[in-house]
Image 1 (cartoon, rainbow, N blue to C red):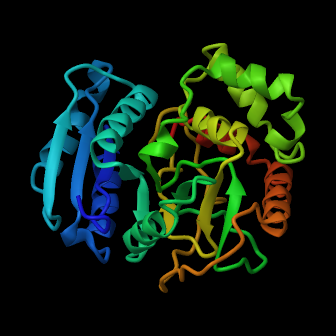
Image 2 (image 1 turned 45 degrees about the vertical axis):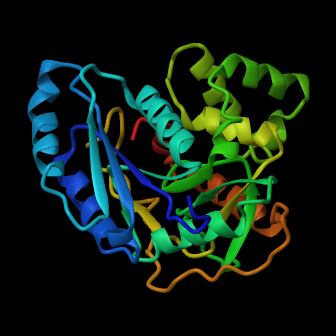
Image 3 (image 1 turned 120 degrees about the horizontal axis):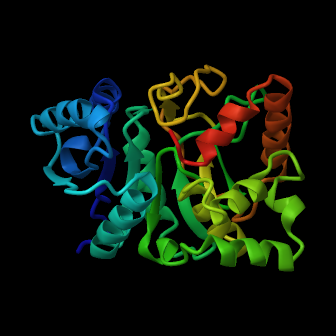
Length: 301
């Protein structure tokens, strides 16, 4: 495989036909879409009430075009979001060595794939960097063109096999390590958001989030994720259409209409941006959106 081969795109869909269509249309409009392989994992309905919408989604994905090659994997049993993503990502990244991951409510800039593939190539030999992310919170202050934050994220992302290999499925091991190393405050971004509580609830089977385990796995290995200073992704699923989700526009972002430039930057956490994220989280609490954000990170959307 050529070192410059584009990463396969993996899209996870379920029971939201309109959201899926918006996600795919934006992806089709991406530079490099027609040169990229697309894998679509379709989970089956978990109950009778969801059968019809799952059928609509499956009918739609069978007529998608605009990509180099499209492979559809229809689950015969309901995996649930976490198991579907964990197993699907593992299968594809083990085959290709790198991967770009989207869910069915993420609308992307036309420069999303270019940024993902460019950064995957740029940092392929930098073991400190575990992943690339496409979304950034609607922070008011101007941010650098690109920057690193410790941990990993889940709204439009990419990684290598070497990165995904450190994913720890056992939340109890992760939680114990956070506690044993007295890292709770830093893990919670200076106490601005209760990631540790989310992880505790995953361990207690009160949520089944893969995302909190991905974040914790990267954080505890002292790995970094590259973010764009202008968002390449907008989540359109915060409209009560997802499981256990509410309705808010507090996380809406203006998707950039310019490419993100990849330049040499220090491979270390950007403390300025981290403080800005901390301020954003604290503002989110003050604006009474903590409940919605909690459900986002738990992986319900």
